[in-house]
Length: 554
Image (cartoon, rainbow, N blue to C red; front, side):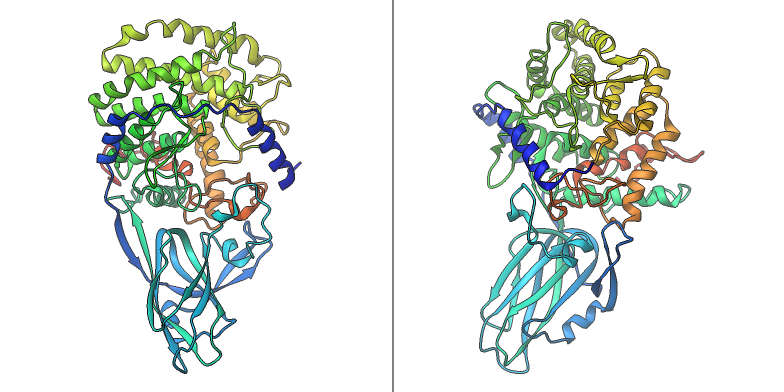
């Protein structure tokens, strides 16, 4: 049953009340200096509106509305708008950036200021429906609107705050009855630190794969600012979990390697007092500890560092951040019970997915084993394997504990927690961790969970990515491709210009925050199909070279 906004808020409050958030440790200035030296330049692209549109109610569509074209974008500069009037400008594509326009009085001299409400829409729902009353449990300050007053007309005005948008709804809230206002030279200024525009896959690929790949790259591009933001609409901060998937997609497309490196140093430079990296850090106004530790994300710091070193050959960075990566493993291993099994007590956040009621113990156990295996691979690359030789038996012990205590042989799935919950996320992470004793057992666990109507299914592209990655790890290529088609393809069918933060195909209006208007519709953790196609060969037609190795998108 779908939880109500009130149930979501209560569950979130109860989880937060159990958490023990330790204070920040001393910033590591040397790491922060390296991070700040790597701040990339932002590139700006000017985009005029392509059309004036209006929202049409369409209850048959995933987002309840469609946009109907009223006029070409050039018509905007020829029309006057009086107090109480409104219009929606369509810029034709999703972007992260700023809005500017020249406001000119028409009909008479301007004898008053004008007051405008500007609503920035990533999708039609944002500008078709009122944002209030708002029922979300995160701050309404994230809602994408501005009320601005322009005193002296004519005037060139640029909205100072950055937004993520395709549509802008402009409402003339107040103006003198003696004049109207014309909006000339309205321009969206798209910004990104990507050095190139996304490049398509070869035409030999099916059209739907080419389109998913391009939208995934545009998602990455619009989140690629002076760091890898999780969402340019909301949060606008750096999270370890998002970083791993952005970095993988970047290695296969935009090659923002220095930004990946910068992000790793930001996390290393702002640890928790016990040495765990934070789940997120704030980049502005200056790098700041985020006070949100996430255990599964801390484990993924090790994985992200190992993959960065493999992708770039930057052994110097690997060696410098090696102590930080080791510290994550030591902190996580201290949380195992006497049998070497991890239990989520709620004292420190485990994320895994936003699915309501998800038990995260088994999945987090899998993340830790996955990270340990990558830590050993990194040690080999850095020629310091002897330092961590004792981790090998721990990996074996954790794998044995999971097989003995979590596997339900009768149902052919791994369970989690005291209620022996079955979830797709738990199967994915335990398969990636190498827990199943055979490829056949791994495949069966994934298939059985996906077929079980009572299993907890994910609602984020983040968790769906790990199901697809797990499928590839155990030879389920056709099913992985089908999953991408049915999940990311369904977002395309719903009109996505960039991929969304949360999406449940069975309930497209679901929100982990209790209100659809709090959702982000360009979110970093949804960009991974570009990596699946280009680096892992998913969906590659016979005779087509590896897109990553041939430089496609670079």
